[in-house]
Length: 207
Image 1 (cartoon, rainbow, N blue to C red):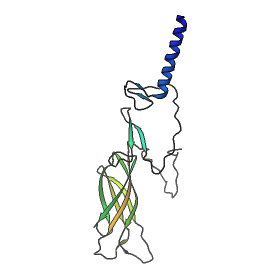
Image 2 (image 1 turned 90 degrees about the vertical axis):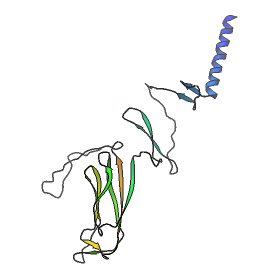
Image 3 (image 1 turned 30 degrees about the vertical axis):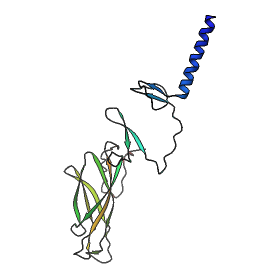
Image 4 (image 1 turned 180 degrees about the horizontal axis):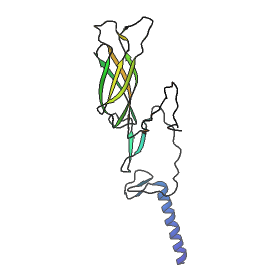
């Protein structure tokens, strides 16, 4: 009789546990779990962990990334936050009233030790006249370079100038900026061309 009662009590307790687990939330080191399972504290997983179906992002979704910092902590990188960090930045500079069409050295004040900057496009809004033969043409030239630890921008139309020398032109220069903490740095590869017009890297930097 006692054995039967013990077995019955054990079965009832197991059913209560299963019912509790099925219809409530479980917390470890927390009395108010916010999800089906919440662990308040460190957790180590020694075996595989299965992740369910993850739907693809749509254009309307705000994407976030999980980043491990140098203290081995996981932080959220929210690219929708206008004041937070991001994998990359797009910045347009509108440069007004330069010396005709010539920007020799525009200092972005961006630290070259922490960021990489790439000039991706340039547009100048005034009509130009060529300083040499009329059959020549001139393409806009823009580039980014480092001087005294900050990124600078140069922009010009070689062999051309404003047709109206009194006009005040405007450059619109778009740039890509990447944090060196969030991008892989391969360094510099010097390629000796041997006074030839063609050459090749010894090995690809990435496969």
